[in-house]
Length: 259
Length: 206
Image: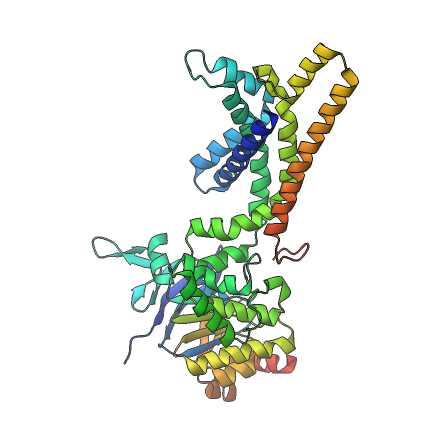
């Protein structure tokens, strides 16, 4: 049995009185594609943001590749809260794509993708440029290297954002509702990039999505979130075809009605 | 003299504005208070009195700090306008979208790189219109340095006036010279703005 690449152990996150993640446990195997679905406010995005260290967790521990992300071993061997430097070290294995793209508006597509490899990994510019060109080609933007984000459509911007995250060669990619800000006809081009990525690489992927059809065909496992916990999980066939829990059934039929 | 004081004063003003704005936004209380003290002291008191302090009071005991009139002029004007600029920069830095910070973190950038490479270029763009105002203000305030013995443009004009009594011509020319210098600042800032806004949509915030 291989060690999971990402492990959440009894993770709790609160905002004041509101508990967003409630004693959450989740193991993700290397190479696994996990789709996270559920009603809004159920903690789906918080899970990804906690893994990206954009949110501090209140209790529990998250490990990536057997290394604690939120904690680090103190001199006496006990685990204490991780400091910024430790988080920086472990965080490098994770990449994230956001709902609102968050491209750097003052840089061209190519510069956006080159920036972190040069500034963070210390690649020389030539190597970084080659890597960036390859990735932009892969996401189908070979012609748009010198375009600025404001000159690109939403779908194109999101594909640049995917290339930008991949340029750091993460082991785990997080997709946080990456098509929610897009017009329906632009969703397809982004989803097909993700699909190809899944087919060609052994990348581990976690995605929060409302695209049930995509989740169904793409993911190895579906996690249904409710009230800060994984309420039900299983293969797409199990979860969509024969949900065990009332709450899951209720959610799925509500989504079906809307679509 | 006016040009030199304006140039070096502007540089000092920009640097101190950025540093003070960062201090003001820092999570370290001591830095925050240091920045607030600087901003309020230099913004809340008269520039002329500040110049007198630097030039006439500091050389006396117990301070015993003696500086040339030129250095005092740059320091006084730069720090004075920098205090105003700090608040402009603070607003500009805060106008940079939160998503930009999150993207930097997801790409594992250090706080320094994040500021220098991502936040500052966007903040500077937002700070240019009010910043241009402040630098022109600095230029015009240089006329005060004649009171600490520097012979700037305004001082020379008065000297010439007393020697020749061509009052109208001399002061008309002085006015024109200040105006032209202000246009140089204007032009420089426009060029900077154009450079920083490459690829940006007008009014685009993201």
